[in-house]
Amino acid sequence: MKVCLAMAMAVVWWRPRRTVKSSSTKQRVLLVRIDNRVGEALLTTPLIDVLAAAGHEVHLLTHPKMRRVLDGHPRLTKLHDYEAKWSVMRAMRREQFDVVINCGNWDLESVTSALVARACGGTAKSVVAGPANFPSGWLMDVSVEALAGERSEAVQRRQLGSPLVAMSGPAKLSFRDTAEFKVVEGAYAVINPGGRLGFRRVAPERFAAGARVLLERAITPVVTWGPGEESLVDEVMKLAPGAVRAPATTIDQLASLMRGAKVTLCNNTGPMHLAVAVGCPTVALFLHMEVARWGHAFAPHQMVDLTNATDPDLLVREALTRESS
Image (cartoon, rainbow, N blue to C red; front, side, top):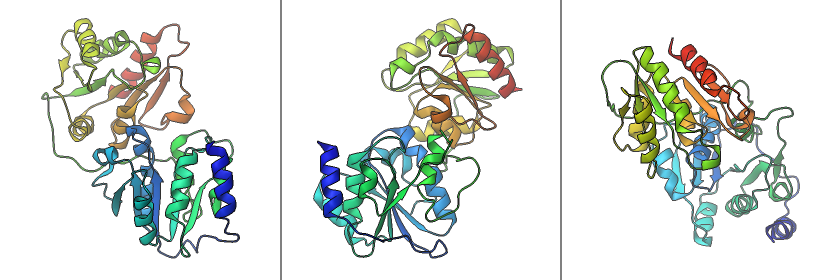
């Protein structure tokens, strides 16, 4: 149904030969990413940063729950709350943005995001850009082809700004500054055994094994958690005497802990992207997910695929030993 709607609206909204102005011209840009996942919000920050660094004024339309992740980002001019109402799209149209970018995933159709972006950019002035996948690409004035041979979601998300800015190098995530938050004194590491999706969550025994490696190196493991993850912390604490249970934290407090940590050990989930965004050396454990796509395989981070590992504890030990040395 959505595919048919996208095709029909592409015909109704057809605007041939509309292109982005010269990249040397400062422009007001609206990014559209309307889901409510922490990791997806953080994966948009390389695009925010590269556009702002080039002198463009960057706005973001996103789910209201993502204010806790992106509000106060130093490179973001303004955050706009998305609701599935025409009044929201009309308000964005009144802003008269020069460019609207649909920040949908490069290999998925993301029809709702494409329709919202097209509605927000439906003025005589705006140019709408986004992934060149079917049928969402039909709704774009400028369809951006995915980088050939590149699997990284962060790099491909940043590539959506290529009509405005030349792209190169790793796509680095970012997060706002935070007040200092401490749980222990001295050298410590953050261990976060939780995750939104159980099928890609590594067993707490692996995190306990990592905690024991850190304790051997006189680094205190601080075990962090989210709502409903208390039992995971209990298991890690039982198997790693000497680890410290963190109190309940806000995202800013977790970011502050990670900024001061020697290393963060976590699943492939929102806290992984947060650790990378604040520059903490990160050892991320992957199960049943593509490392090249969702990970951050550049120093000082290590992405460890345990899906078919015969000795997962050894892989965790080796990665933590390298990062904490």
